[in-house]
Length: 328
Image (tube, rainbow, N blue to C red; front, side):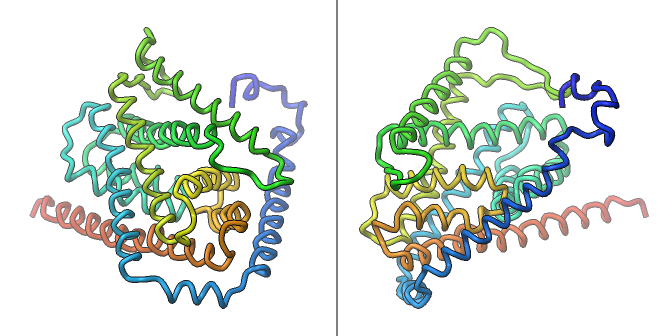
């Protein structure tokens, strides 16, 4: 909220809230109702017997490959926080940082960014003696790395024309290419700012933000793009073999934006709806849904269970340290 809003006269709104806030809740409820109708319609069009048959036909080798790619993806994401260690110039070891990144990512994917990305990081990093301002810097750099990598790889895929939008969609294929070009220009602007900007520091709500060096920005680009590529590789491994990897990657990138807009934890239903809508002319709906269900089990649910155990172990260790330090 800016100063103009905070100093608005009381008579502008008798409730003391902006006019749009009155409509925010009913419009949000309406939006979710529309999503429920959409998902129900989608579910009716799917041959669930085919879905279950495809799930039963998965080879152990395929599941092992998908699990291995998932492990690499989580390690890459945890490395976002390793960049943050350099960024805040605090003496933390990689053994301390990687578990925080893995736990945060698993909770983030399943329970929203507020739980995983923010609350979990604050709790775990505060136990390591990191100040709130430095935790905020690590969080900010991690978010920037994720979405900078997204912009670069999405810009390349969208502008190439590899993903064709179905007829009748509001966003045409040519418009998607335009979005890709815009993303590439924004990415180039970020790199240029990291290289040439004279002012390197800003303060937002008391939090100091330092513009990273060009070398660090390139590392952000590489890690962020690699993580999105690995996520697509997991899905590609589990979907029908006749689909091309660049196409799967492009659809994942489109579904990610849809998930952000809807604010549904784990993008539940959104991912499936986008993949079926864009790829149903390439493969059967049943095989697509089966692959995506397997993806959710391997990339979302299994890591969450592992991260929960890791978190409980961290809490138990911290509790034992507190007890041992109490004066007798």
